[in-house]
Length: 95
Ligand code: HEC
Image (cartoon, rainbow, N blue to C red; front, side, top):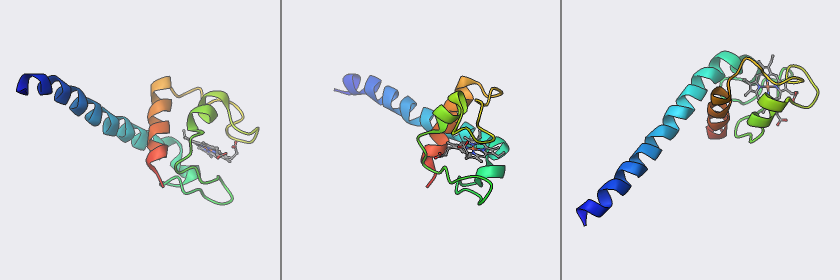
């Protein structure tokens, strides 16, 4: 019994711990690259930028560009794919 459960536990613990790490990275990136316009909780700063807390569009906006308005006309090319996914994961945790 113990032997069968152990590998499952290891897998689920490593999955659980990798998520917060991703979100933490995203938090740091968000602070330096997004918060000045979108607010430190993604709550938006009128009239500068809309609320993005919980948004599912982050990945699309950062890799393909936004709604033809500054500053997301173009993808944010300074961001790596890894950074984009941690940002997307972090923004989804915001409310
Ligand atoms: C210079 C100010 C500025 C910065 C920096 C900025 N944004 Fe934006 N963002 C805007 C503005 C203005 C809009 C609305 C126009 C548009 O969609 O292009 C917007 C729109 C968005 C949208 C789409 C919102 C919606 O629901 O349509 C997302 C998602 C987004 N930003 C994410 C981010 C992320 C993530 C970062 C950090 C990597 C970031 N933005 C950095 C100003 C900014």
